[in-house]
Length: 229
Image (tube, rainbow, N blue to C red; front, top):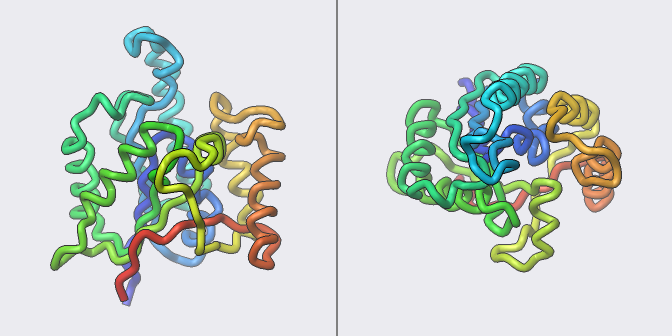
């Protein structure tokens, strides 16, 4: 019997890589169907007025997200184009309904999304929307929810926002780390030079650090929200 799909719910193009790119690559290689949903358009918060953003750059970023999904082996990529770093201006119900639609369409049993204690407001809104959309009522297909960290958003909150990220589940990405790094490098507008946390060197160091915590060469950390067996 085929396993149910895995759904990755991310706020911005590159969050899926930073949060669980190695895990996506590993699960895909093992035969799991992985669906990536990116809710925000990215980039437009770099202008004071969203309308001043270059539409061609936004479209190019979306195209990069499709290249990344292909590289990681995801079965499908869904994008919604919500305003970058302005999710708090969108009615929460509208975000919830989008998540509910994904759950209804793909019937995932396992879901990965953002930590609720991140510095980035879009991550926080999406975290709450996911928990609302996947309430454990009769017939809810999502049985496991894990949150991930995003370099330059989770740690930069310095534990000041609840809930702080406290991982207890770790995925061995020793064989997938370089694919994660390669995927991030496809996001040329989002990658940075060391010592920025989104640099290739920092991503390797982060994965190796978490790996060392649990006796692995490289790992991605996750916090369990809910598991029903």
